[in-house]
Image (tube, rainbow, N blue to C red; front, side):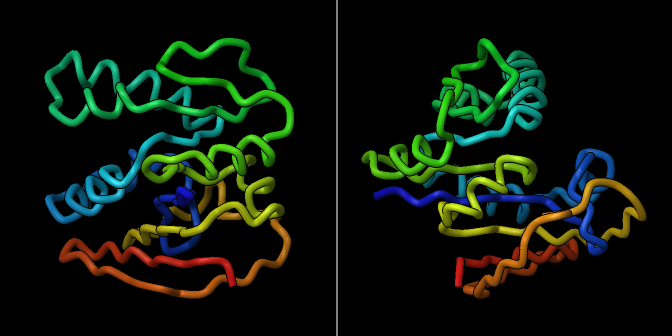
Length: 179
């Protein structure tokens, strides 16, 4: 059975949106190596619509510009949970119907882990059905002041810290599992 792993960038004040604006000064070799290790364990991506649309714009352009890691990202199968998308153009399958049942089915398939980037509406379903096996919260040494917050409006959920990694840049990755 494959694991579902969520990887999310977050500021010290809990903001998750627009990480390209506040996170990029901290992206370095340690950051890249940790991200690459998570990616290497993956057999597919699970994405919400917003993350999918942003990635679908960025990654093909990065490959065209010669980014050596972009080809692997573009080739990896993707599953997109969306109630509004009618077609997917970036090597993806749109999950239609019961998202929780489909994600549970995907977890039962052989292969590498399912890697989910970003936190948003899809997480309500995943939390409610206890489908996420590991959360990797990348805490950046930044205070954004405003923006969409991590799990804003979600019900009380307890997690257990199972690991942490500190980078010289000040990023700390906290790994949690459901309690």
